[in-house]
Image (cartoon, rainbow, N blue to C red; front, side, top):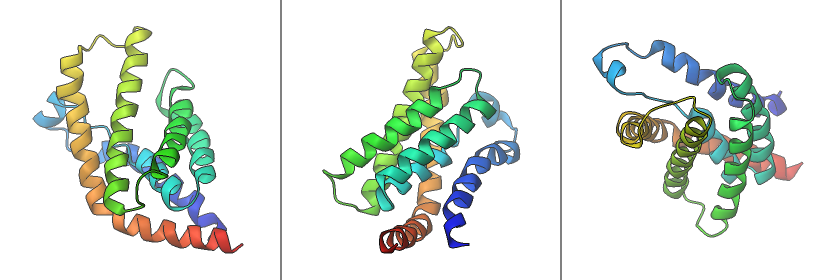
Length: 172
């Protein structure tokens, strides 16, 4: 039963993004700004830091593929980026101390990298005509604010769960 907790937790974060969007109030703020929850990516960063790099990359590959199949028209964008970001964060965390604040900050950097990457790919293939200024002010900044609030609310319990799972993985 304990073995299934990590896949269950990843699935909850995967599904929570679409549930959050469905429950988000559709008022004037929603019409003007694009709030993109990146809860799964934040979970993958925390998984990479507090469990193992391998877990982060494997879950990034699997859930990135699911993300591409469910949410996007272009297959491979999230599968590649989630795996690469998990790998990069594992390498960056070898330089920095394994502190919750640093992990949260690096998660926000990962969200920014992902947003720029997806925007660049969409711009390259012609799926968007959004200017960089509009992208920055109407999508990137609201997305970062939303995900900072998520990190503030959920980072400590998430860290505690993942540290416990990581400890159990190392014992086995």
